[in-house]
Each structure stands twice: as C-alpha cells, then as structure tokens.
Picture 1 (cartoon, rainbow, N blue to C red):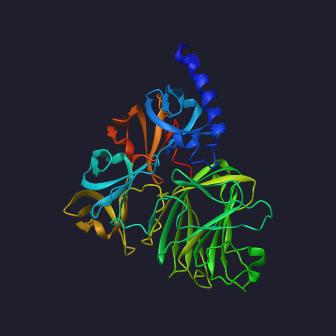
Picture 2 (cartoon, rainbow, N blue to C red; picture 1 turned 45 degrees about the vertical axis):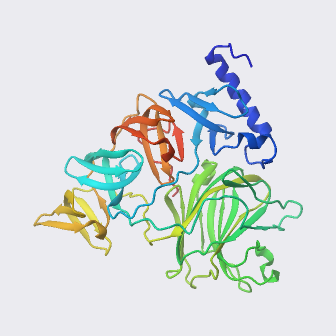
Length: 474
C-alpha cells in the first residue's frame, strides 16, 4: 500500500484491506490457532462495522468528527476509519471496583441513559454523585428522571471466561454430522456448529446471570440453568437419556424466547413464549436471567429491559446448581462473553416507564410511597417536604425516587454524538471532544463537560441518535 497517498484516499483502501484481513484471519466467529499468526494480533478490542464484520486490534483515538485511528500488531501503520462505517467499538469488560458504601445510587436520565455513583448532595437545582470513572459529577435536577439507591455489591459467584478448563465439552447429537465444539479465544467462547458446554456454577437460590451474545446468521440457543447434568439432553428423546435431574431450559432464537422445565419421565411443557423483535433487529444483545427458587420464577432481560417473567405453578424444577450453554443448529455462529453470576436481591429494577407526575414520589421497600418534594440529602437521609410536614427518609429504606422532570423534547444534536456503555445497563450519551489513552472528554446537557477514564467503558456506539433511549424489548 502506498503510504504517500493522501489520507482521505488511503482511508477507503484501509477499510477494504482491513475487512479482507478480518475475513482471511477468521476473526469473525472462527477458532484462532494459538501458535499461528492470529495469536499475534490477539486483542480484546474490536471494531464492529455497519455490515456486521469485525476487526480485532487496539483503539488509538477517536476524534470529534468520529474519525477512528486503529492499530494492529501485524500492520505497521495505523488504520483510519470514518465513523459512518462503524456500528460500535468493543473493549474488554472493565473491572469495576467493588464498594461497601451505603449511599451508592443509580440515576436515570430523561433520554434513557443512566449512571451510578455515591450520592453526595441533592437540592432543588442539582444532584451530585462521586463516581469511580469521572470523579465528582453534577447533574441538573431537571434532567434526572429517577434516583435508585443500590444495595452494597456482593461478591460474584462467577466472573469472566478465562478458557475451557473447568468446563465440560458435550456432544450435540440432534443433528448427525453437524456436531462441533465451543472454542475459546480472547475472553469468549465461539461456536460455528451445534455445540454444548457446561459447568458447575454453585448457583445461589436467587441468582442473576449476565452474559453477552453475538451471532451471525440465525440465533438459536438454549441455556440450561439449575442443572446437575453436564451433558446436553435431546429433548425429543429425553426419557431414553441417562438419568438427569430437573432443570430449566431458556430457549432463545432470532424471533422469540421461551422457558421449559425439563424433567425425566414427565411431559414437556412450555411456560410461555414471547416475541422478541430486538433479537431479529440486531446481531448482539446483553442477556440477563434472574431466578428465584422460593417463588419459582425465572425472568429474562435483554439489554436491560424485561422480556418476560415466568412463574412455574408446579414449583421450582431445577435440582442442581450448574449451567449449560448449547448452540443449536448449523445455520449460524454465536459468541458468548462477559459471563457474570451473582446473588440477586429479588428486585426487578427495570428502567422506569412511568410519566412524571406533579410531585416527586419515593417508593419505599415496604411498598409504601411518599409524595411531595425531595428537598435535600444529608447523613444518609432524604428529606421530603409533603403537604403537611417534612419527612427524613433513610436512603436504605427507599426503592426508587421518581422526580418531576422536565419533559424530554431534545432536538437532534447539530454535532455527532456517541453513546458509551460503562456496563450493559449503564450508558451515557455525549458530544465527543476526544477519546484517547489519556481520557474521554465530552459534553452533554445531562452533566456539562466531563472527562472519563477510558478503561471504564465496555463499548461505544457512534452516532446513536440523541433523544432516543436504548433499544428495548417488549
């Protein structure tokens, strides 16, 4: 390639070259040979292009006009891409520092974004949080729709994929001649043929199971939870399979999701199916499964929004504490990453969809509610002025506060914006000034100007459109 060409002309050549390189090296849903050339370019960062292609490497910078400078170990010169060709850039899952603080809250903005931090101050004009990613941040009160106190973080039961060690590789026999195996590369499992992988997880009685899925072609997967059997079960012939204990099969495909309790020598039954248009409109999603053994419930969330909560009238079917992931069929490829399991507190903390009323409303953990004006925060208590008196409500007793927020009628930004995700359900939209190793600087009506730590982000979408909340499943 002629490096003396003008940068504008070289940009198109770099794009063509990079996409060809990605296909040749098999970076998109393919097994990499650790001893081969692919290992030399191993990275936990990736560009996802608008056409679905993926290119590994390392981000050097993003300019205000969304020009991306990208590096690879096997290419001597940095590559330049226009942001209009890029869907998003993915980074390694950031390690969030755990905190035992009792004043950690999540605030939700009127545009669907949300951020977490320790609550320092609240008054009629602003809400102030101390964050781990940008220090002290001040948010105009009128931009905040919801404040939700968060319980102290619990130590995860399982966090991160580090290899196939400890996993049971199962053989899927439902489609003869098309069985494959999950392979591991750079913090993720990949399957291009029917494949099963399982592990004893010691799932708690109330569990929250997070993971990211990306796919090409048709999505068709089954996730077994609370299983004691590490091999895949052929549901059509389950009664002739070796003995296995009961479990739940969460089945998802490009169109819908369903839940099925599976027990040997008992008829199969669906607890209900639900259409999920988001799975058909995208090729990746953050999935969360929440289970409550005492209440015999299993809930599925996609990208932070509740898809369905199922109740098993016959009682909880799972008899084990393990999990199994099965890629079904050879019509597509799937990537599994960022698996994290923790004990769940039982709250269905889905984003608020209630329109603001004429007063602030604090919903308490015991089901009561306080209406009035949230005036201030001090010494762990939120002061509410009601029609008759003032109440000091301990933050620990509050489930969430719905504020009287100004209606969100934002005009499209005249300059390009980005939506950056600190974790799957925590995002911030802003006009980017500069993104490089020194910091991520941008401005937003939600917080003014701020500089974030680059390592805090898991992914960034370019030009997502201001004023629209993240895609939500029905």
